[in-house]
Length: 225
Image 1 (cartoon, helix red, strand yellow):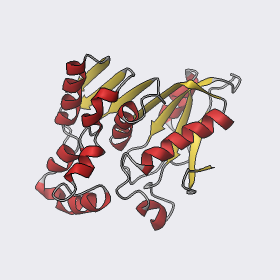
Image 2: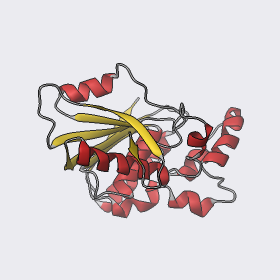
Image 3: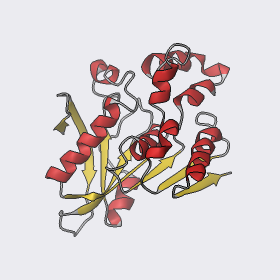
Image 4: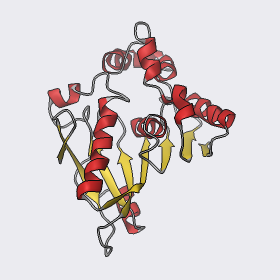
């Protein structure tokens, strides 16, 4: 656990590679999806896979995660790409200061909201990470919300309240969307997407990939049928 820059207590899990001195280790920040979800104690195959290959794996229950009470959950409202991302950066700073991590070798990876967080890392704070891996992450909050099918209408209202309302907060949502900050990317980026994903549609990947190509930025795109 650590204290975020605004005083909120944040908890998470860090897994270390076995048999290696905990000093100047490379780190993968593995951001959970949802974001109204949480990482839990127990066997995690991704953390074990990374640790087995010499990487420390950091999983953070940033504000907006479930399991810590309503106040903690609600602290994530309208904080996509804001304080929720600050919590991730503060976690890295903790890991560098107290956890034996090499600040020059930190990758950010995740799926769904975690993929969005990876894109935010690459665009909002590219100097923090050496690379980013986005798996089915939204690149634009505007197109994400616009793609919701009618049978998700109840989810849509919750999304407008917790993320933003495109009818009244278009500029705000655009400011929190990595697609519009592609010029700030300075690191290699891997984008992975499922062709038939109904929640985060293929458009989210293809529009960021098109922007990366247009800017001549290093990237790899994996599209799964």
